[in-house]
Image 1 (cartoon, rainbow, N blue to C red):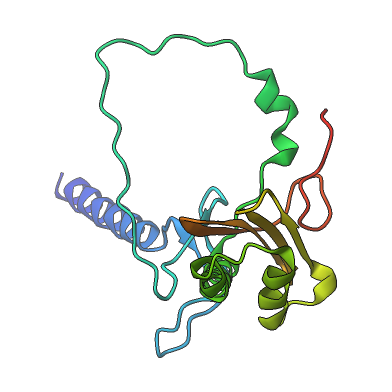
Image 2: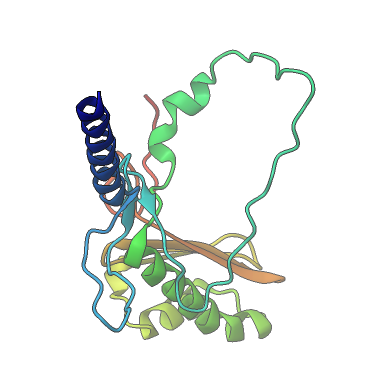
Amino acid sequence: MAKIRIRRGRLGIAALAALAVLAAGCGTKHVDTVEDTAGATPTTAATTAQGRPVDFPCPGETPTPTPTRPVSPTAAPVLPPDHYAENHGFKVPLPLHGQSRCDGLAAVRRVKEALEPLRMGNDYTPESTRVRLTGLGYPADKVQVQGIGRTTVGFTIEATGICLTGTMIPDSTRAEAFGGYPDGRGCEEPRGGH
């Protein structure tokens, strides 16, 4: 009987050791690049085990709290499929992730800073806006500007790997960066429908 007890004990220890080894090798995040010993931020987006991108904080970015949805005591109504959204999904801009997202946020800040003097001076002309945007180093053929009424200017910039679009209106300058469109080339929103 003593032999059996020893074997069971050894088997239990071996099983625990195997579980410890397996648990130590498990993880939920993969990083596509290697961080240096100084702790620099990786240049590409990390991904979860399911392959979804995980973004890291960008310089100067203020984290926004994750909204929580209240739990409803009643079930949500079942809605019919949204065929409009289904048929126009190709017009939804692709989000940026990783270093491209940080580059896009930095480009948005530069564009807003460049256009602010025009807005403050009530200069809503496409010509002045184009001069400011090309002055940031964007090639003239990659900058599209159009006047929309007397006090609104819209713009689209095709930068390397990033699209910027926005408007300048009396109360603010709005801009956003994105990665293009699923079915489009360049930064212009595709036309038509599926």
